[in-house]
Length: 143
Image 1 (cartoon, rainbow, N blue to C red):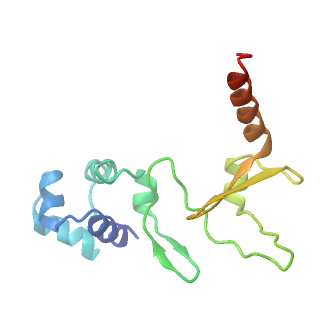
Image 2 (image 1 turned 135 degrees about the vertical axis):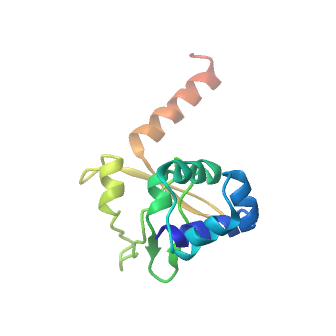
């Protein structure tokens, strides 16, 4: 819920209730009521909060949970938290429907699996291959 997100975002950003209240031009007491769930901000103040924290208004208002983790903080603008997946016996995973819809992934589509020390990423193979070819063309002087 909104109140949970307000508490998480404030603490993640190292702000006091007083600092947040000052930034959006309200009293600390009014802000404290939002965090407790006693009241909610109007749409203009909610938009200011979303902008201040760099999240969408939609993600500020709703709560996402992940199995084994609990309530997740709202994702930054342009980022998404799609939920969890389970790796099957043969390494298969099911990508959440919302993510498949967002990226128009269809059955049989090829994905490239990338990683660094922090985790893995999946990219549509065609987009990755196109960017790789453009890079190779630049290196070889073709473009």
